Amino acid sequence: MKTSRLFLCLTALAVFTHLGSPARAAVVVTSPDFPPIGESFIATPGSVLTFFGGGGLTITVSNLILRVDSLIVRSHIGPDETDNFNATLLGDLSVNGSPTVPVSSSGPSTAILTGKWGNTTGTFDTEMLQLDLSGGSPFGPFMIRESPTKQSTGKTTITNLGGGGYKIDSFFDVFTELSIDGGASWMPQSVGGGPNPVHFDLGGAVPEPTALGLLGLSLLGALRRSRRVA
Image (cartoon, rainbow, N blue to C red):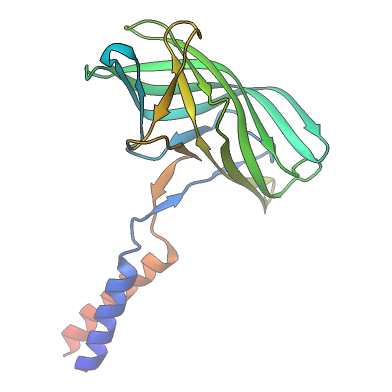
């Protein structure tokens, strides 16, 4: 009996660690078209864009959400699909450690999906080719663009759920630059203290009880019952 309870305890402990672990979210929509209009790409919680300017200037943007507003045009280059769409980037901005203020910037964006043209479902390498956004703040106007020198890559999986529903799972690892002088000069982003991309998941990353986590709960219940029997 002791050996049985020990086994249950160790197994439950190992499995239960998966409960609440972040799982990349997806969205369920009625169209397999990319990007899904009205949905948002949400940065990994805790991600902060930091931009360093002259004279000790430090600008940070946190709580980032990239919302897909409307489609401009969908086209293709050979088998690769190119999607031009309007987007809005939402976030909280701080200058030199000041209290954050909510800001937004909007403009045209472009993504390319390798091998997507003519295919309704599947998994496709994805890249953000353009992000040209303009916005305003209490500190003045600003512009954000996708880096012209670094690739902002990702992946998209579109699954037919049946009954007219589709699941779209997509992410981008995005490099950006910031301008506060109308585009005359640009400051590259820093993430986590280095020249790293910020990770955006479609729908965001949410903790959810996986099947493995639910198994952990069942094992803990069995452990309690075995103690009562003993």
